Image (cartoon, rainbow, N blue to C red):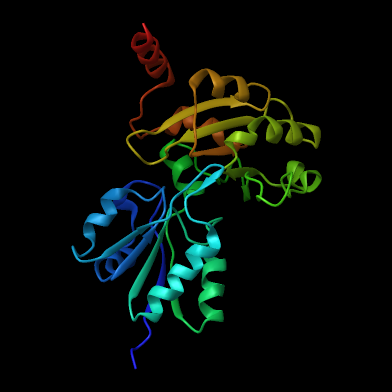
Length: 265
């Protein structure tokens, strides 16, 4: 009787391949099968054995390459074949990554699994942009929110009345397409229009770009700068620290805009 394999739910980190954990690296190196997402840096796959089986299941906004229930089934099927399966997910597997659901499916089918945490983009992308999500003088708490609605619901399941005036720093994942609504709701339920906001696109990578504004201006600024997903939205007074703490070399919005115009002409 063939021994069952094991599933490793591994956080690949936010984009910079050097931010992968040592434990995550070891899992990749020993993997028989790697099931990986769109936001996983392809550089990480190079650490795997040449004989490894690669299964891409990346999801684009509003376009899922492989439905989630099929991904669950792939993990269990490969483990039942006796394989060491690495489910490689961008950021952390359990921070809006559905790692918990995949682990549940493994448990229901008596498949051994292990979580290997990863550095989440909600902390690292702002940090690379010079924005610590907490600071003794500005913010003693941070709230992480998914800004992307479920496919079976018409609107975001967010208690705006409690959220808007409650947390010091708000960090929205996957919320760029709903940016106007997020700003509107926050102002409607208690945040002032002058509350600082930052958008960090492709955080921690060489393609990182950051736009800063406030709740009343950020939508227009994002459109002007042509900010695209993936991008993290940071709301709160800590955004002001970027002016002093920006340390990571990234192309300025002005330079990018000039480059776009020259390419068009």
